[in-house]
Length: 278
Image (cartoon, rainbow, N blue to C red; front, side):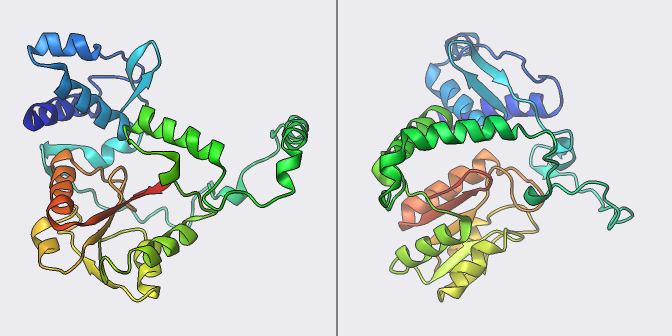
């Protein structure tokens, strides 16, 4: 089943990246796609869920699966001569220091922000939750929000978890700090991609961990190099590796999962912009 669903995944992903499937194009239903390919629905469903998780397609309730709109620049990082041989682009330094826009979160243009509507909604929310605001909340995060997140993760990402398994944190460093403390008995070494988001190794290093860089020429996790380390914790950004935006191919994901299963390892997925998943 694995090879079949990987082929389906790669084929649809390639058509999307090359523009053969455009934004909002509707894919055949899982049952119809399986019928056309004369296979069971399981590999088709697995491939679709992987594409949803990586943001290539979206599942619209009661409507079906539709191609998502990719950033204009996405093709610059994913065009290939062959399936697993990325085309490298030279960096253009001519525009450095001359960017006309700053997309930092604190430097948005708030001139059009509906401040009066926002204040009204804020007041309504505070009025409804007034009694609860007088006490400390749940140390894992509000139970109602965690319950909604568990449902969202299952519906959108295919992650099966209970609200008791979700911990909400104020920001990334705090969550990573918690993980570093919780995992100290698992391993004294963490393996990371190279390059990677520097906050990941720095936080664990501050807690006394050794850091092993186990990628080969920015091509993702090299399992042979990982096996040469004592690391049982790996931190990855499979959906968009920092800073180039590389998407981890399905074969690398499966290799990493097999490593974790065989060695009792832990994978920290930094799906930045959303959450840390372990």
